[in-house]
Image (cartoon, rainbow, N blue to C red):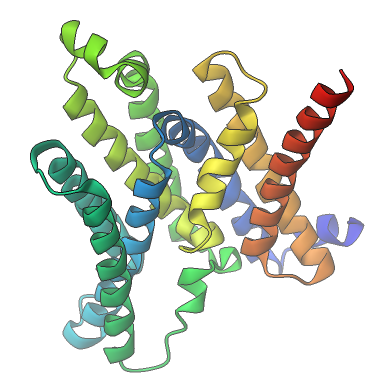
Length: 282
């Protein structure tokens, strides 16, 4: 572990510091929005949005090469696609008679398929594994600025709409009677979920983003009586998972994204097993 700390202060290992900063910056966003998602039981829906992100990444890479649109970065493509998917799913679920699970499944697979096709048709070698499973060590200074900006937006909106979000999550009928536009806040939550997913794609990848999105919040739910407490604990658990997973991956020479998720899953299982043993022994 000493080798990891020495690497962090090594002037030539700036990428490792960028990786740590990116994970710590993203943790408050997925701690807050992940709590809302777990409370409203939207994990499957968030999974569909996450997998659609590959379509936006692939389209951005294709446009960069074929049309010279260098400003259209993969992260920008991911943001646009994620928000579009969130709005489509939200509006269809609110105003259409179509089965919501069918719509979610269709958007899920179409986004993935589109991304793979765009990447396949983009000249040059593009490794989709870095997007599917994350590559936090490839974080740049520009990525940090983008992550910090999205973090401020997500946290700001999540905190400012705290009371209305709680009402929309737990008792929509009561919230409507109180004059709260629950449909609007549900769409806002979906958009915030989309932005948070984009934050984490570079950290753990598309495939495992839902794990890091829900596991800290699910673990925190066992230690909190109020939603804000759950958010705070989930944020701290997310930071510990990122920092601890990154250090373990460096020391043991393991992929960083899966190691972060494994550590987060370990915390969750430890809590579940511990509570089960306590109830039996008590």
